[in-house]
Image (cartoon, rainbow over all chains, first blue to last red; front, side, top):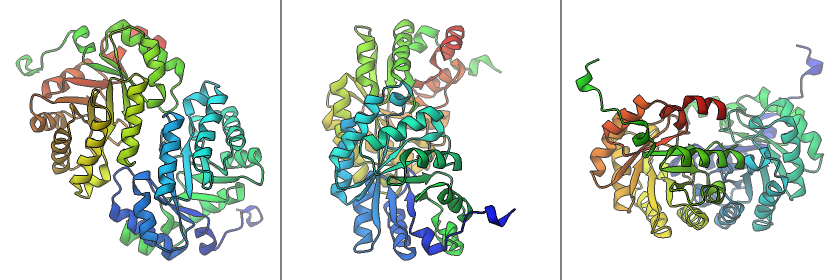
Length: 233
Length: 233
């Protein structure tokens, strides 16, 4: 391998600051959520990312730690009316979430109903005006044209970030998708790469491609505290 | 094989009347939902089962056909607060759903928080008192003791049916789970087997084990109209 072509590798602490430390398994328990929060505070992850059921628990567990709580919304299918997404997001923010990762209306996008996709995102945007809003496009299910449309509509509807994947939609983040998404949204909107990122090398490659946030479940291993990870997970 | 031990095979029309004709892929479109409804009306399926986003579309497409619309709720993770589940269910019923398939709070069950599991189901029950309420226990993620607890709590909270699986939780219906669930809930509560049922033989085996409803995506093939299915799907 030609080192001149390798992306610069961030130090573990710098990587940690870009990571949403993620636990979205449907059978996760309160104990596991509290463990996630302890890890995030101990290792300096940007946020914890949890299901809406666990937002209040996570916010309590983090107390005054400088770690955001991120809640997913309409996860992982995105196939519920906009009003439900807006209400779920509003409740998550009331419970302590500062960031919302919502799933788009994938079927509406596939049918070319761009007005519906945009209105769906805009409804969540209006419901949580002060939250950081990330829009999951579920890239593995989309054509290139659909990926471009999804990112364009997300920006138009007021999203702060576009995000590649739920991790439950048949495929995770790819370098090509991250680069495409960064190219569409430009430098002022965030790009979160998520799904299948399990090594520092993969994380650095995503960042080199344009990601400025990473959704990671194997975060401890990724930043090199494998021994702790082995004991906890 | 000893025919005396084989379950009785229902005729296709009798099987169809026990089937919730199901389309829950997150990228399903309105066109596909309308097709699902046409198939259900043409072949006499009991219901169509769709994501909440498509309930109104399905109800319109079915017009006066004697086919129920079933909406999933908190699907497929079940990891959102009870108030969100109740609101999503109420909206689905307002949109035309007569049946609600909700996912339990799996993590709460795993933590032994039975009060939370029961309260979660009861909140949906109160929100949609006139709907047929099916409670998805996601059996593949549960121990036997947890399956028993989940069924017991569902009945206590007013469920009309217990249901094996989302189809997205790492495993579908098994004969053993259906028999266990029927044994717990007794004869007056329904048991819906769902996830991975793709043949008439599998369907009949589930019925012999105690199921009185089947959630099926490959419904046309299952009732022997494979040529139509091949053209449509």
